[in-house]
Image (cartoon, rainbow, N blue to C red; front, side):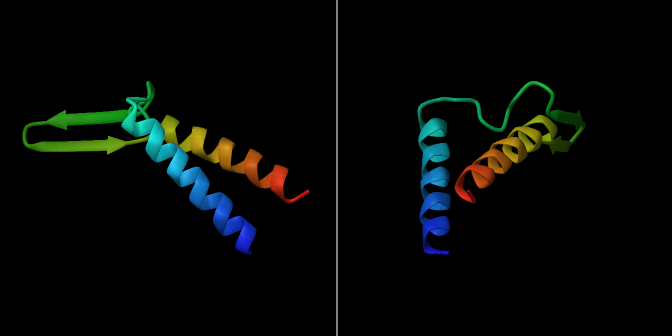
Length: 64
């Protein structure tokens, strides 16, 4: 369990570093943005799919 927490922390820190250096993480093409008047609805569809694939690959690698 300790190794998993360390790896999760490193992954989160890596994503944070990418965001600081200007990688548009969370604003990928395919994310749904709906603006009308004073209301804005944002649904990160593609971002969710990319995160799911990456986390699935990481978990499959580290469970072996």
